[in-house]
Image (cartoon, rainbow, N blue to C red; front, top):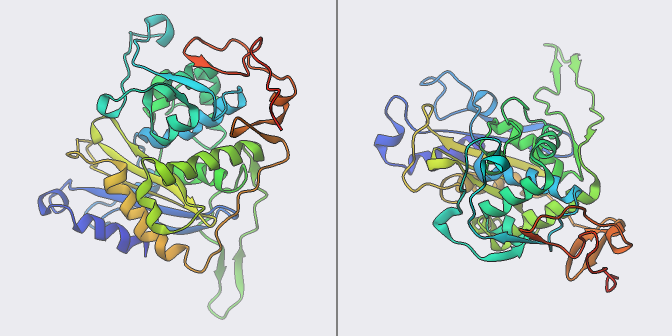
Length: 358
């Protein structure tokens, strides 16, 4: 199902893009979030044409598919889904970037002023992601992301990392998303479960890994709720065709549309689709939503068949304030220190108390 899903999308592309040497490539990898078992691994369009496994070996810019890890880090600093962030274009000074001045912009140059953190992820707002990374501290965000399995050297602690300017493999990204699908625990990916002798005896049996706690259950729950909204009302609306209430994920399009991604999950199955050229070059008007998401959807329709959707139950240490989730201690006086002027939070130290919280 996975190989056919990738090939169907590639076959819909113009012949000049897919048949020539150095033509359009792709990869798809899928995991069981609860066990780490690899359910599918497609390393390229044609292994005979290009002896290279893109799913395991290709380090590419993830674009906006990396943003959830910035948001996850920001949650730990008290920047919850209902906190307002200024979605207005601004120039970051050399003091702020540690390098030359930088003026990030949103896709389509569309800006909305102060908007909730949740909307920032749903609409994939670049300014919101950069502001959250700046407020949470770039080094902290990088260290937080490394816990998901990303390489620190390939994902440096600089503000452009918020927009996916680092480098990841499809397998790394799938394993990282499995944390949100598995309540905050990451299972090491497993490709081989057993090796049998010719006459049936077992030569090797894989043991069930314990798994590593990456983030708290409440962090995973809140992130899952936002990633579900990306499907319900955001850049991943195409995934609604899966007809699963628990479908969650994020599109990714690198600078210049040189890499397009969709990373998502449903019913405990995680899958990541990537498309691009081996020698990176722009793909005309391609985005994660238009090129990678259809591969994911095609595969997932078969992968989730017969599986039960996952119910989302808020952990006890999560509360609702003004209709969105916060960590419960923030309803009892905890606060966020040093909130910058481009963020408005009722949980800023010295701000209004959350007296109407349940």
